[in-house]
Image (cartoon, rainbow, N blue to C red; front, side):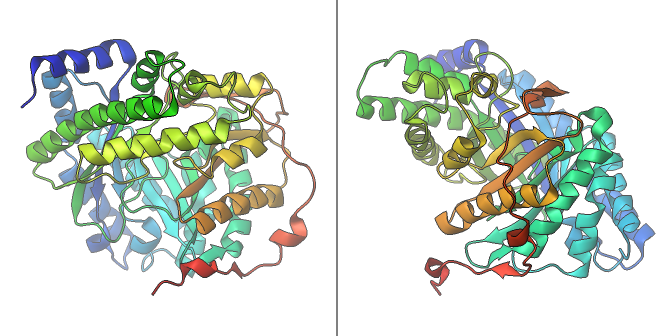
Length: 454
């Protein structure tokens, strides 16, 4: 039973500390929509999404009103489109027609984003995979709500370096295609290693082939709640610090569990997972960077930053696991630059570099997220950055990702502006030494020795 003290505490977290349910994401399988006729395929996709998701937004609004819990986004994730469209799509334009159908369906049901314009190519690319990847610049420049992701590596298979090379080129083309909007297309494109099947967070969400026909996944976030809790234990030892984070994460996750169960009941769709990821926003007081500073860092990037982030991530997961039987997705701490005012401040203060961010991704929830780089960066350099991050995920048996924005026409020290939850990003300087000969080798980096556990 929930007692009055818990109700008061939860209300305080919501009203004063910016606790929110970041997203209810409805996963929908489109495998049964596959058809060799493109028009029929698009019709089936539109009809299934609009039928199953017809009351997603109204359900979220109802729960928000009834329980007073802010639900920021309502989203949809679908089966990777490279699988669904393989029989019908023979050109880039064919795949773009599906992206437009997804966008139209998202508008019809009123969701913020729809993810799953995706390909899974951790070992090699089929012709369908290649066509979808090549269509990404056109698809993201001609839609508003579609998000794309490509999984190019895993601990079990290694890294598909042909796909890594291609995506360096695709990211540049996507930036160029959306340069009139500060290259926002790249903010909707994620490159993964070890991508999970049940991630509710955009832009990387897709409905994995291991999932059922439909599922409700919830992402909950509360950086402000954690920071406030840590203010009460300033100067305490690490045991006290860890216990405080863990207990706070437990409380946050219980809020997500309530929302997930209620959404599942109201929509008659199975509950999947709670993703407890401390996902920041540009709002003051809603920052992962501020938590790290509260732990004891002058600025994010100072010596000790990676250790502090590892501690935070681990305790968040320990607390979350105790609060729900089904914790999944990415659960941990996101460290996007543009979406976190504290991270932006650290970059602009000169404390945080791309190399330090890469080191931090060894222990964080995802990877290099929402990083703006100079617009004249070479495609092979972008591929090199991707390859480094994929290697971290592969060797450490964790999910890593890259969401990088070449800011066309801009140099290090300038800004790109996205607005809303995406905020703005300072353009970061990068290592200018060349890696072209490495990227152009082609083929696949083998899986590490510890992957052979069969």
